Length: 305
Image 1 (cartoon, rainbow, N blue to C red):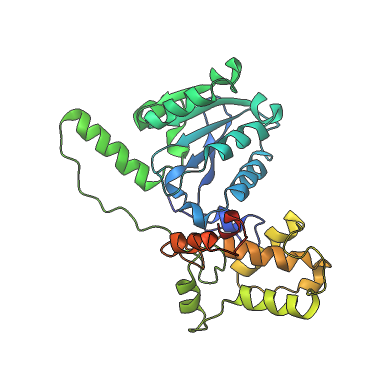
Image 2: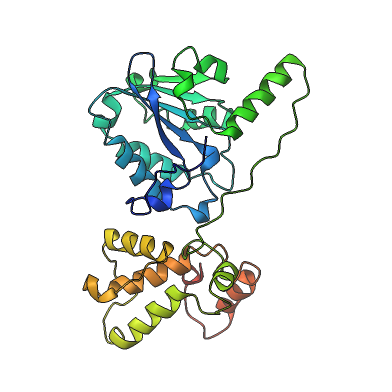
């Protein structure tokens, strides 16, 4: 199965997340219920994926099916320290899925569970109702999944198929067939957020100042220097996401359209926050923190983080 739906439009409201193919709507189970798959191996490193956007995309997708009974298949293989969401995110995600989502979820199949899943279950057990807990089914191999679902309709990532074959070979004492893992999914050619400054320079004909930085700073210098609370106040979350999507797709942004000087300020902060390596670099971090011990310097550590 392809990582990305070829019919996916760049105008999709969650194109930046949907293009990875993390979520797929994949046929029906043996009771005629819609099946939605979640594939961890499709999740890029955390600095390249806005997990808040992922949660909203998940809700956006489920909203189309939750009025009827549905089933979720969770392919755990591929979750690692680089792409794993925080426990805080998982907790808030569970809380955000209110009764409307949980009521019509008839089964949650966890495929290839690991000790991490069991530890997670122990941590979250106080939050999880007994009724919901009964819907969770652990599936150690794809052959078991065939007993519950119309397997030929499922979209199973090649990485999961290879991992399942490896497990079966180990169980049967055979050496696994060699297979190359596909390289990580590259960012969009026009990507602006969550990519390195080197990547931006290479994609911008060697221009040293990234477009987002240039446009926001120019706009703020022209129209925002006398604004009280600049860089301290928040802006519309919807507007910020829309602008990120436009920039990542290489489309023009006119800050005048948003009527809020705090929008470009928040965009600038977001751009800097999502850099894989901060401007002051991890290497120089300890030295920079050492400045705080110099007499006469009175700013707080969190300003450097």
